[in-house]
Amino acid sequence: MKKTRTRRSARMWQELISEQSRSGETNESFCAKRKIPLRSFEAARRKEIARSFFEVRTAAEVPSRTWESEVEFPNGVILRMSGTRC
Image (cartoon, one colour):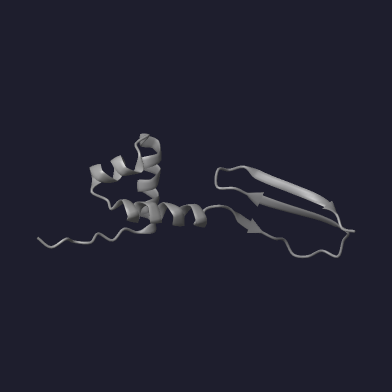
């Protein structure tokens, strides 16, 4: 019997990764129950972690000796920094 290959979108992988995380199951058990190749699941998880690590946005340069920066992490935490240029 020929194996068929299931293509999953990034959104589908995100949902599966979230479901696995909430389930408390190991990757192996979760994938086996759903007939998902473990290597594919783990590759998608690595890509998702790399893609959603954090996003940095910079404001236009202002001719000033002071600076401010803000980083918003995926979990909602916002890191605000400010200082003075030397």
